[in-house]
Image 1 (tube, rainbow, N blue to C red):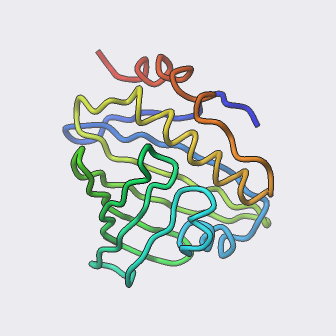
Image 2: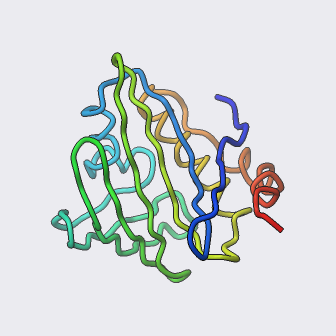
Length: 165
């Protein structure tokens, strides 16, 4: 798996949107389960607990972060198997994100959009999402999980270079 950064940055309101995509040779329903079922999210991101649904908050463990912290994840919108909008709440603040799935001819494209306020540390956030999405790919393909050291600090300059001056 290549660790070449793929994220793109777009101006949005008073901040930016970081957009990353991955493509899977699988139906959207199957990819959806990989990003919404606790036993499957545990393979690449971390498990979650609680009763999920629009307007509800679940607890998510970031299993691959130092100390494997738990955080609140509010489900803002859910349209299976095409759209999931959430807001993660941790010590750094509230992080709105949207995940969309588009299927065509047995191939599904996953698009993650992370809304960022101005001044957010893109050099830290971007490599993290590249890593986690590659973890999703590896977990679905039964391959060894990637090493975060291959993403950060190697991709930091790329993501910092996306920020308009």
